[in-house]
Length: 337
Image (cartoon, rainbow, N blue to C red; front, top):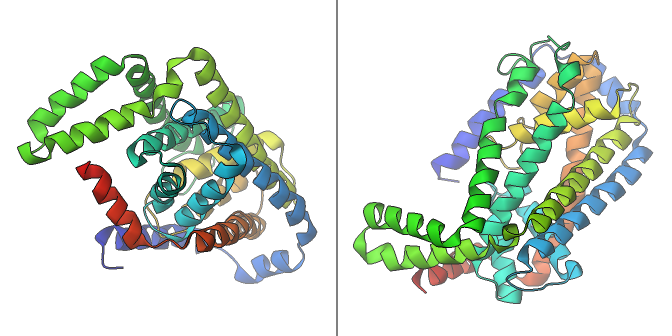
């Protein structure tokens, strides 16, 4: 609670919530919420959990060069990670699942973190692909997003970052010796002498986590799996849409999904409060959905994405009897090895 990153996230979330509430009729939104058919959330949650299972399978695939771990073993760990991202700041769930994997399967935290970062880079590429599939339609959407210029500009800004990250990871995986030399060069010049061996060891284990990207077939498999994951998540958007009195095309929901998840990379309060909602509402308004309907739908969608996986992850975490003190001690132990 005392860390500045936490309070920065709270301020950013408050700003985005202000964007959501600006010009909104709470009475109209309440009427939309009262009239929604919440039975549609059931198939939405079901298809979302299929996406979580696909994430567990993808992680199992990325970890194969390090250790073959069944997908059914990975699923609870992925759920714990989701829970951590939803209730702790700074996407702490990623560190949490890396720690649980180390505890249960003995995989080095630095190596599993490398695979998690690779996941995020591929997720970013797929989200941007969702956006670019809609480019012909985006040229006709001139409504300002209320955040940073047009929706088209909002989406395109992130392209270079994610594509560059994927290229860097592919080069690191294809040229591990050269990558190790580059990391060593920076270590020798930027890290104090007493920490250099520890940092080199961490970097070597991190490069080990890139091993799954050394085969073009494996890279293609990771990319295809990433597409499947995000199609499942868009399927949840589609089912929840039917609970409300509006309809847009599946491609429009793909666009909303891509834009929303790009914006949740911005630091915010736990649970992506505001950074999920404001851009999602902006996209729907650009498609002609009224603010009251767009806001009611987005808030219900956000809750449906947050509560089920958070409860499941909390259940699995309780079974592990974990504490942040244990995680910090394990990280310190790995840095000194």
